[in-house]
Image 1 (tube, rainbow, N blue to C red):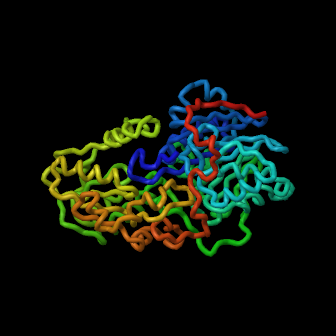
Image 2 (image 1 turned 90 degrees about the vertical axis):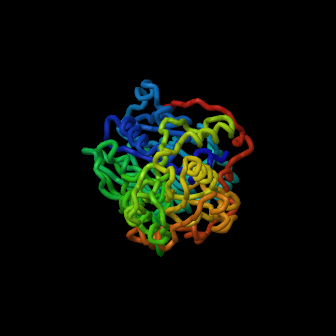
Image 3 (image 1 turned 120 degrees about the vertical axis):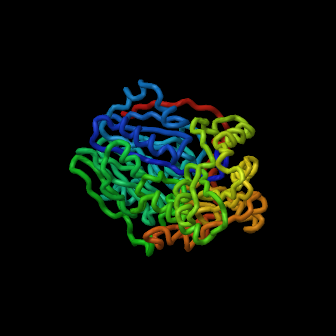
Length: 488
């Protein structure tokens, strides 16, 4: 099931993870952290906590506020160690068994995992284990790590988790828990973020620093690419699981362009400040005579501020967002989803009527929503509409944790610049260059730009899709209620 495009003309979200060690109310704190990262995944949510002898879990489809709406759920989730997850499916269908954390009992005890990213060798590893008789309970790539941890070849290793992580390829930030331990790991190229914070004597791990701030934790540092941090009764200690350090990093530049919350510190930089720089550079590369600059809220706000400041033009809010429109993927018909899309933003006629408008957005993927919004500006009296995008044309699918469509569905892969502008109905169209994008971050050589350039930082299987690990029964549509479990 592909949910991309149901909500907006933006890439599908990824996932968000949050873990706590040493806090009596771990589940509540994790819930608050997940709530602050709801933007990273809206299909499902889950929390698992350990009380030292048992692991209690609750997960379901929907927003954090929907999955954990009953007070009785929190009564079950007792423990001082835990991990949580908000999901947008980049591998595996939308069903409750695919919602994380995944918790299993192995030969030596209970293990739980939560994952942000995509494993590019998941299909190969899954096939190997299935050939050996292993049974998979989900259709997510994340489950591969549990089978690696269960494998006697790694279980006998003095550094079992590090040994298992070495077998993985692709993008991953993992949280791993046992009854008495919390671990965090990032892939060697550092695709996805993972930060460490302190809350009194407790440790917190989270995808974004906004989650640390939400629960009152102090940011200490990032988990480094290729690092495994282990938190137990002896405190925090770490080691590298990388056999051969990579020549360069490949952190996801789209985290700064669109995904992360503006108040987060990601890969060492403030997201809002990076987006403001993107907008300033965009104004230098694509100036145009106009009257006002209007952002597409919320992801276009910071870039629009930068563009307006650089261009010396007033910034005004021509689009008004309705924050109370429900999630569109749960609406049963495509017509309902399309209708909801139109309900999310309306145009303030008094702002744009009779004006030459520069409209700023972070990206154009399929273009359908951008086309409607340009027409909405004209319907409310805009005399000219100039579209400016704070990243380069998105021409290639992502295999590292973003639900980009195939190249066939990406408008920039199938139309020329002029054809896109004509189809959208804007007077002019300007994308930020790759050079301009990278000039807006402190360490340009540390970022992956494959979705713009097609230059993937590792060999990939171009045939893999979101449904690559599905069996025919997995693709059936059916409703599932939230579930609570306790693992002895």
